[in-house]
Length: 262
Length: 232
Image (tube, rainbow over the protein chains, first blue to last red):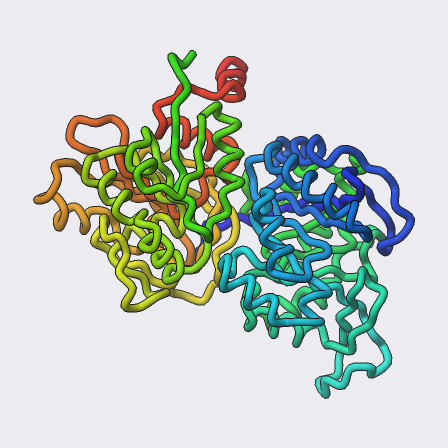
């Protein structure tokens, strides 16, 4: 028995001190002030706030630290921050600015050691391995198991790694990640629902909590993600555009037998 | 209205993420000070011991800067002391996470890894079942832990009561098994606990956590709560 609630996590992509949102990591549109939006989401019942720093320049990175500080002061729920973390020092700067957890994506593929270093220093609960996965049809990855296969993509989806996402998730868990943030690149920004087959495969293999990301727009999508094995469901556009409120999604989940914090 | 600002000293031990605790203090109008000076911690009105990271290195940090003695002095003198997450665990006897490393030992209980097959760490909001006399209210608290105290304060009470008059109470939650969400020590005749050990993070537990923090510090309702009360 667990009294643990399933979490809803709105994600704020931040750039230059503003929230932005694109489709398939492209075509960015301004979606508001991060601290204001985070506060609104907490009031609506968000269980956690995720910030993704999509800066490409050093100047913007500094702005992002300031954004983390502002959001931390605005909300009293957990705050995870990802984007551009290459070293333990990068992680520490974000934690000092007010992040409770940091998520590492490309750097973990290039240097898996960073996961263990962060875990040793700050504890496994602080370390999220963010995995962007893309469905591959050709047998680019020889897993020998058949069925659907997903490849790990890095550098905001631009670089293929040849890594099998399911195997990589389990390697991340072994190295010290406390949670997997799993984004389907195929579904991200499309509103067609999470890639549940991917979620199920990763949740089974990883043995640590998995956050579903990419594609949710309707209440059923959130429910499907949780049924597939996610402990938490993340979404961005659907909340930023006021299509659905977190309260509404939680009501739907509760009605369908999921434990949520209301 | 408060007569004056309450002051609180946070022991900086190198591993803990203090920004969230500071943000909570800012929201509640409490003057918070981060310090590496054990004397400041020993003398402060209130002292929370936050903690993230691993038991072994965190205990070593406490001992290196002499903070263990300051915390012990507070405990023995009955000055308000709070342990958060790993901070709670460090006030116990020892932990499975670091066999052979003694904890502060205020609570004669062992910290162990969660039993059962649920994913670890426990990450997220769990439902609190307040024990009789607990300062906690029922509601949701945010947890991020793989280790926990399973025994209930009744056990500790028997071993402890000879040394100090008062009583232990606690609150529980479920994660594959029943575990201690809080352990609180109320000296005889006191309405507030001098020791409040939280396995969860009050600083990350929304309005519920803020209300608990305010009660522990003997502060009134927050302005948000006052609005809520009025609306009822």
